[in-house]
Length: 283
Ligand code: 3HC
Image 1: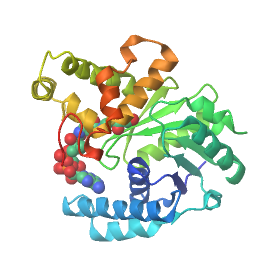
Image 2: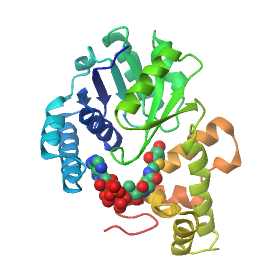
Image 3: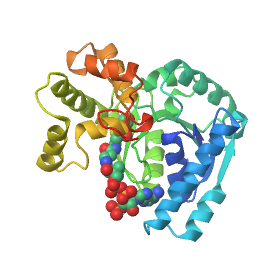
């Protein structure tokens, strides 16, 4: 099937990035939020990101205006009815996501593909509440979406090859390199990333190395753009904690168990960059 109109549920950090790259690639886009205030905030953030693209010479003023013109904001889920692809980027709560998939299944045209941007939850659990399991898959984008080149496509045991190839064509048309990942907690990237991040937290927790030395070692020794503690702050410590717990709950393997320090920081509201404090101070 040919994808022309794309729906994005959620206009937070990930949803707005997915909306932005889709509109820039020429798709008609509908983005939704739970209320008008959050929707306005999300749309303003898309505009600001495109303005940054203009400033950096990656986007022209005309392309920015055209992209914004292709994006329609809504707080009404019925507006997804004629989308060919809907990507859910709501908060990481399986029950909420299942409810969204159940609603979309009733509202959307029968051929529409339903995707989730979940970072770690079971895609099959979302597919199972629909009457179109073959048309459900994971489309896991990376933050910041306009800049990161990867898209993980998560194929469940029920996803059809036709759905996978339509999603692959879409991913490539929004400028991403696509990999196919299994429907296991963390897929490929977070399966490898989270043990790495929490091992850095364990080094701090046990007082064996400083945050600066850990980060500098990885930036200079492995050529990563950010050290693991800076990256954990960037991803959000609450998000990293959630993903580790989801992986641990499903697999019961200690390597995924979040360290106590991470839990305490999350409890203290130290979420990293978004809250102004994590392993580093951002105030
Ligand atoms: N559209 C297009 N291009 C844009 C843009 C936009 N809206 N905004 C910025 N850019 C371009 C810039 O022009 C620049 O391009 P250049 O390298 O060719 O000059 C590039 O994007 C980088 O932009 P900045 O100069 O603003 O930023 P930095 O160079 O400081 O890099 C960073 C910032 C991209 C965040 C970099 O530090 C990085 O790659 N960090 C690691 C990020 C990462 O690992 N993300 C994945 C997190 S894990 C995840 O998301 C999964 C989840 O499930 C947890």
